[in-house]
Length: 232
Image 1 (cartoon, rainbow, N blue to C red):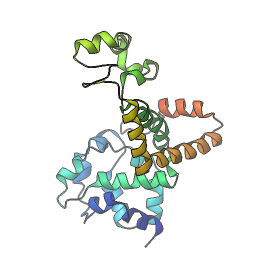
Image 2 (image 1 turned 180 degrees about the vertical axis):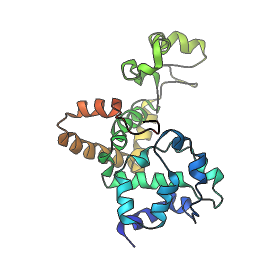
Image 3 (image 1 turned 120 degrees about the vertical axis):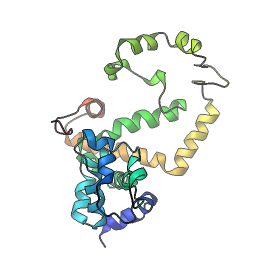
Image 4 (image 1 turned 180 degrees about the horizontal axis):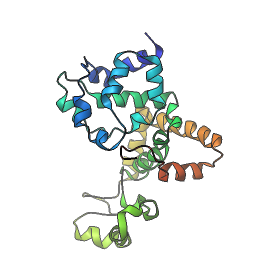
């Protein structure tokens, strides 16, 4: 077998996600992403099941594997119990391990997402937290949410949250002891190593694109070219 296919077979998500695909297309029919993006999970699974090394390599470098929302609707409808979404997860993982994610626009977004979401967990104990939201990066949130951010303490107090305080409740302040434990979990499970790898590959790509890391971060977070959607 080929090296890429062999690498995929070592991923537990691949083992659980690909049994015997009959190429019926039910996964594509039910897929929310396929309704909007130029995305066909049936073709992805077919390429992998055929052990097509060139096709797998193309997927690892493509936009395609980054369109999946990982909702697993495909799993609920497949007549043979396959999980195309799990196969896509395995492809994403391998693309990251080999540094191929920087070859696609959507793949490059892994850097700002990792930096923000994983960074938030390590700094505050939350994946998403109001203190980490910059309205300049999310104009789609509109003026109402901008007002909420300007009046966070009052708003969250009225909603019954424990924002910015010790103790129990939503948005409580996570202790330094707990944050240290989270960091230890990241170190032990390989998450820290993965974050370092994403940054290393992204730094190399930023240099190729003639950008500083700050410019690369902003560009990959905000830029979306045409051609991704079915109506384009």
